[in-house]
Amino acid sequence: MTGKQLDTYFQDIIRERGNRALYSIQVFLAHNKASYRQAALRALENFEWDRVKDLIVPLINDATLTVKKEAIRVLTHFPEGKAYLEANKMSIPQDITQYANTKVSTPDMSSEIMSVSQFIAQINSIIGENTVQIEGEVSAFQMSTFGNNQWVFFDLKDEKKEAKIRCFTTVSQLRKSRISPVDGMRIIVTGKSRLSPKSGIFSIMVDTLAVSGEGELAKAFELLRAKLEAEGLFQQDRKRSIPNMPQNIGVITSQDAAAYKDFMKVLGARMGGLQLYFHHAQVQGERAVESIITAINNLNSYPEIEVIVLTRGGGAMDDLHAFNDESVARAIYTSTKPIISAVGHERDITIADFVADFRASTPSNAAELLTPHRDELKGIVGQKESLLQASIQYQIQQLSRNIDQRLYSLERYTRFISDTVKNTIQRLENNAFQQLRQIQQYQYTINSNIHSIQSGIHSAFTQKHNKLLVLESQLSANDPKLILQKGYSITKIYDKIITDISQITEGDILTTQFKNGKVKSIVTKK
Image (cartoon, rainbow, N blue to C red; front, side, top):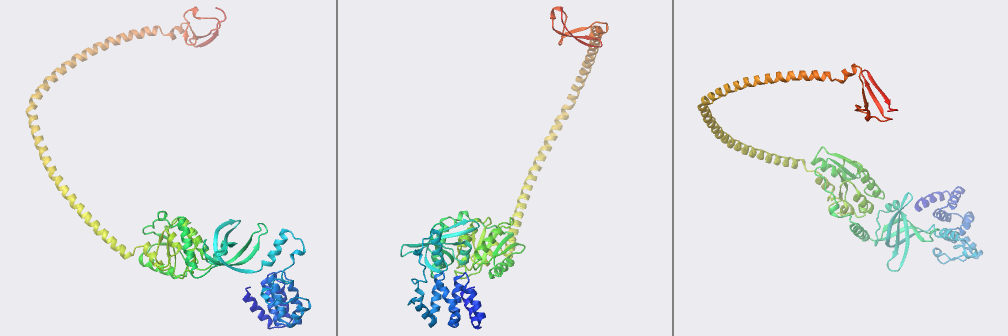
């Protein structure tokens, strides 16, 4: 519960003014949150001293300084309480809110020897419950990942004096504050102070951050713009061109935003048949940054999407915070799809506009950039059609002229060929008779020669045939197979025939061929 909710709750309880009300208050007096104990103490002011005395006095020695102060303040509300303090030799401070030096406010740490961890625990028990607000200038801003969380660290320094304090928080907590700290920005942090047991560093665990002063938002914008520009996120040469007449378009905005309706209205009026991939995202508020980054990453997973439109309506600089966030800028930079930024009105300039591949002045302008109007397209098609028809007509005329010229040339060439053929035929006819007589004479000579050749060939063939018969007879007579049939044999060493005993030595392996087989033998004696 918030402090306001607690006070309202206790007011309802106080109206009962019975034991039941005191029992309920007692529960909060024993609560582990100091803010609950403080609210319960304030509620006790509405009861009689005798009924609340035993509830207030024990809290004078509470471990938390703010509760101690509240207990003493409530005691002084009752005359009997003041008397109790005097009877117990406790002086009443002039300013209760500044009370820090009495016996009950700060434990005497010199009364015992403590270990380092005990001392740090004691310090944290005194300061840990106090929520503080500190104003200063951001320096040494950095983000790191430990475990499952992303953490933010920075120094908050006093630019007038050489004083600074370390601050840290989670990225999710930072996004709730809706600002993107940059070195040099002046902010107000709200959080709790602590002394780290491991490092001994005194720091502030930040709950919320706020820009200090009206002009600081503009300053923060310029600081972040300069930082990202120096890193090259705005360079034109790395930006991709927007596809001409894309068919698959991703759209990121709030489903209830007027920007979405304007974009769809203009897009529908200009062109139909497009495939839209809409991804709802919060465009304002503490979850806007995370929501926009998730939408960009999700739409990048669709391979068919050709371009993404990131849009919302206009607003104050604080309303456009998500589009001036560093994390959103880096998500746009790392997108695999080209992104059009169409945020607010023409006068609204955001960091997203600088990083995006293209900036549209309004959501409606984004629709106009992506698609031509169907009437404009019809006009363009009509113009192209007229140009095409004129071009075709010109080509036909040119071809017709070329054909006429080729036909004329062909006719001339045909006449030339015809005349040439006629002249040639006439010459051939004149020479035909003489050629025919010569051919007849050649034919007679050829026939005579053919008869002589045939006679010679027949005679030579007969002689050769008779000689072949003689050779076949001689060859048959000397056929080794016929000799083997008569009882002879052939002896070889390997493939060499032995014709003389001098060719043989002891130990040789002989192969003897008979008419019906072979025998191998070894020469043992010669």
